[in-house]
Image 1 (spheres, one colour):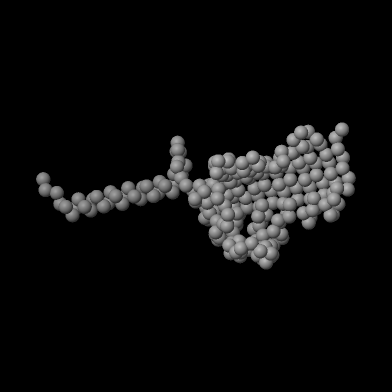
Image 2 (image 1 turned 90 degrees about the horizontal axis):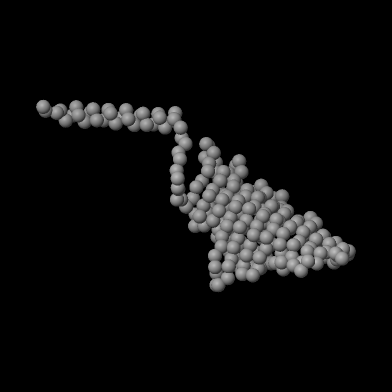
Length: 232
């Protein structure tokens, strides 16, 4: 039997068209849930239906820069892997980062969970850091300026050599921090609670040293201890 090539080709095209239409319609009306046992990736972006970025999970080499309202600026210093959070407008507002290795024969390690003020930097951070024998673990609370950070300007300024002029320009661009409180393990192995006023001056410190000596210090505006309560 002879086969009409043109009819065969036409029939094939019709079948493929119907199959493609079925797949497309099925994809739009059926379940979009997929199950995997293992996924190896360098980066995952979680987005809203309108495309707004809400979370990124990435390796160190694929971590994004600073994203504000969907616009990205290179980060001056973020050599960690981790997870970044973004608010409803697609602006970074926190994250979980981690790193660590044996460097020059000594262990280094970092783990930090932090949350930012709107279009600003960290106001709450839970962190653990290690650099050889120096270790610090704790919860830090910071104040940040009311103005948003001008991240592109800061990214340029930090490339300049350190100077008073540069530091003043960085602060003018909104990249300033005022420590308010810290609770944790200090570098000298003591357990401390430090509280500061709105200008960052230390006003109260509760401390238990590594050898068990306890004290509560009240400080004046010049940083001098005005009263101290010690354990018996």
